[in-house]
Each structure stands twice: as structure tokens, then as C-alpha cells.
Length: 360
Ligand SMILES: [Zn+2]
Image 1 (cartoon, protein in one colour):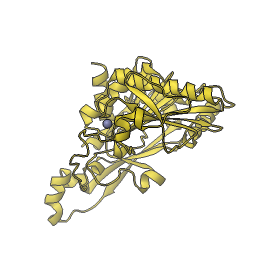
Image 2 (cartoon, protein in one colour; image 1 turned 60 degrees about the vertical axis):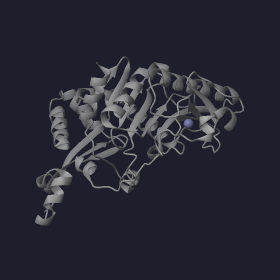
Image 3 (cartoon, protein in one colour; image 1 turned 180 degrees about the horizontal axis):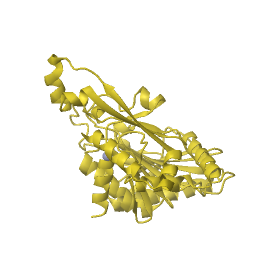
Image 4 (cartoon, rainbow, N blue to C red; image 1 turned 180 degrees about the vertical axis):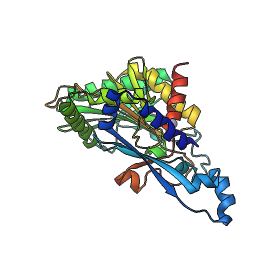
């Protein structure tokens, strides 16, 4: 029972925290257990056993609820969620490269460029997004058709191209200062084109709302407790066995992930130096967990100083698994949109595999 062990591992780890660490844990996180009982009629037993492993697993369920009391992020963990029956669709030839994107397979002739031209790297180049979500919004088109053909050298290139883009956009118009990087890998993650690509935006006047909320709440925490929120979050994860360092990058299987296998990274800067850690994490997701579709985002610091304080915040990266390409249902329902994310995977399983890949 994965989540049984998640509950046990987590509660044992919390119990073993030093009094100081537990105080910090308790002011940021609330974890509680809820039992969900039901009765399986005899006629259902064969199906329940084949689908979920045992009748008792269904009749006596353990649900772990984790909440962040500062940001009000939260997750509900129950591994039975990942064993539910679902409607499969046949991928046929839609995902096997046969890429077929007229625009991205030959971008120089078939995509618009920005008013300041294109940024060209060894493995990628930029194109101006044809339907923009901000004043500066462009696509980093990978040379590879298949977005899963990444490696550390290529990720280094994508991140450096993004950085050059941010600088160029800001040079072109100094009022655009808030950069954002996103990689929606394949359609479950929101990509409308399968050919490998990431996206970059730069915003003006005010940062994006969810980033602004995190900045504001973490600043409140710092003023209230005279302690850095991000240092405390990482230290607590480290002590619970959910966080570790890769060089000077902090990696966590976050306790309140937005969805399956949510990984949060705190770094000093957003650039190619992150490529080893990010590649190792993505490779683990793909090779060990069969992930094909994921979101990866980065929140670099403003390109030039703003009226707000940002220096206490790390550069933040988030990665999340968006589920099988072959299931018809969306991984996000009403709970995720309006209440609290529901997660079937065990963060300790994730950390174990990440560490074995990265530390080998
Ligand atoms: Zn292509």
C-alpha cells in the first residue's frame, strides 16, 4: 500500500523532527488523516480485487490531507485514485513522430519573428507567438521534433535562449520586466502542437497573479516570523526526507503538489547551470514513472529592479506530471480548480527515484 506507507513515512518523519523544526513545520503545514469506510457487496468483490488489489483496501481507506497554512496550497493523497478505471483512447499515430507541424518543423519560413528578430541557439530558436498572452510572448522551438528527446545540453540551450529573449524584450521596451518560462510538454499539459517547444513571456506593471500571491504571502511570513519562508520550506522538506540538494539547487517532492509528482526547485538564478538537475529530474519522470506529458515552469527574478522586493525569493521552478496520454479524462476536475488538489502518487517514491538517478 503506497499511501499507507506515505502516511507512515510522513508521520514517522514528523515525529522525528527536532522541537525547533517541528515548530517551523507546524506554522507552515497542517497534515491530517481522514478515514473513509465503505462496504463492498459480495458481487463486487472479484472486480474490486482485480482493480484495486484487495477488498480491505477499499473498505478502509486512509486519506492524507496536507495544507500549506501560509499559501493555502493543499493536496489530498489517496493512492486508490490512481487505480480507478478510466476510458482509454487509442493514440494511433498521433504520437510517434510523424510530427506533422508545418509551422514548427520548418520554423524559419513558417513562423513569425519578434520585432527584435529571433534568438537562435544550437538546439532551439524563438518565434513570436501568433496568438499572444502578453506584450512579449514567444515560442522556443526545439530542433527536435519529439519533445522527449531532451538531454542536459539541450535544456541548457533552451534556458539560455530564454534568458537572451528576456533581455532582448526588456531592451526593446523597458517597462516589460517580469519574465516567465513554461514548457507544456504534449497535449495533456496544454500544448496545441506536439513538436517540441517551450514558451516565454514578459509582463509589465504587475507580475502574474499566482506569482504575486506567493510573493506577497512569503513576504508576510518573513515579516511575521523573522525567517525566510523559502529556506524554512526547504529545510522542513529536507528534514522530512522530501528534499535534497543538487549542487546548489534545492529540490523537493513538495508536500502540497498541484498534481501528480509535483516537484519544486529553488535556485539562485535561471540559466543553463540548472540543466543537469532539471534533465535528471525529467529523465527520472520519463524513465522511471513513464511520464510523457508534463508542465515545467520557471519564475526568474524581474529583469530590472521593481518597486517590490524580490531578493528574498529564490528563482522557482515547478514540474508536474500531467498523466497518461492515453486516458480520455482530464487530470484536473473541480477539486483541483476550486478546492484542493487530489494526488494518487507518493512523494517518498518520487524522492527515492530522483535521488537514485541524480546521485548515481
Ligand atoms: Zn516537427
